[in-house]
Image 1 (spheres, rainbow, N blue to C red):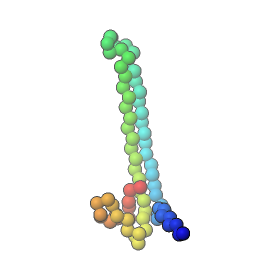
Image 2 (image 1 turned 120 degrees about the vertical axis):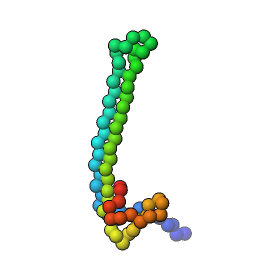
Image 3 (image 1 turned 45 degrees about the vertical axis):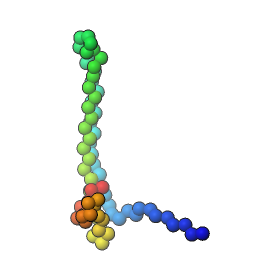
Image 4 (image 1 turned 90 degrees about the horizontal axis):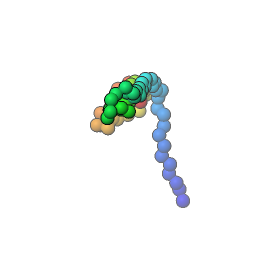
Length: 72
């Protein structure tokens, strides 16, 4: 009995950088019934790219071929 295995192969180098900010603040001086209210906020920024090998020609979900600078 033969088994077949399929796995992704890394085709190029990639770069990933980003920033995440998070703030939690409770308002302790508010009158009833607003005492105990608070705010939770989060912001995330990610910048990524992959330098692909032109012979691999990866295809986006809409069927278009990526350039040499592809998101990670």
